Length: 133
Length: 310
Image (cartoon, rainbow over all chains, first blue to last red):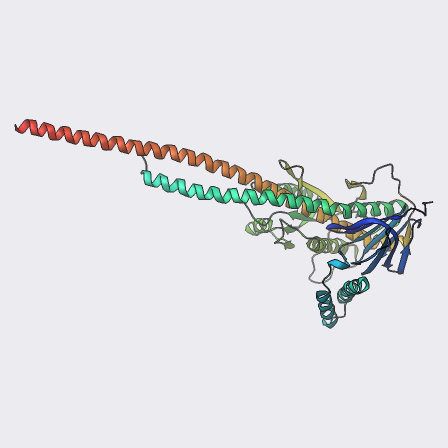
């Protein structure tokens, strides 16, 4: 099985760019089944993630947070790839704008899946910034 | 001499200002190509990881998905034609459209009805002028497509495709299609771009060019929540990323074609200016010669008249 002493190779990939790549000790992401934490040596896994926050503890012990859209998480051989159509690191998000968007999404009054998704997305962005600071 | 010197001067001037415009467009296109290529490169990791994931699911589960099943009797096909929004790009749009016409012809021979989806104003205008129906068109982004557009197009095409497998098409919506093709221009290099037609749906996962190499064997994945659900959300994304890829390629090709067209336009303007300058100089010289001979003639006539009167 994969060596547990080595750090994870993490790639956070958005549709139009590579957002972050590097080594990490731990990755936490939200899947359709709930939050999963991935440590080095995790069994190969492919899972569906939903709009939410991804926490990564880097090999240097720092932690960064990113807001992601629905997408995928794949783990294999100590390589973790997080794919999402949109992904933003917390420092790339404008908190004020994110809050306004959340307000707008909540007050839009629509009750379909798209509206719920928009709310979840906006919430994730606000949470990402708050958690990082 | 056909025209006066003044008229040639005016022509030289207008050709020069046209040359300035084409030269500027050439430079703009050249700088945008680099950006377009960078965007294509930036999108590559996503496509690569997605392809990996799709082939992993395809390899380790026998789940059939609506998007991969070949319909038994295909009767209707959709074509997405990726053209440019603006002209002045040489034969770029017309060669894509020609390729598309060929594909439409072929599909019709196979007995399929063809629904046309167009991206880019040029393609839209082409079908409108010929009064042929277009199911849906997207415009306004051809030189810098975003993923949002790709996912919008993808969602439309996927729902058109799935409509067929569903129970009954709803009132007012387009009837479902059995296959989806994309015609776009592939960016081979700065000098060569070629129109290409590929079948997008039903999916053939193996056709991707960025396949994981043979040596890194796919590990035995666990699927959460289940293989079919993973596939459910994976495949539409895969389709969208293929469309995004096509749009990015088309954008780079469009800019390259424009750069080439504008370069030859600038060169032609140079030639024209040179030619006009020669003719203008000739005309100027002819004018001077004529003036001299008129003066000389006049002096001679005067001298003759004076000699006659004495």
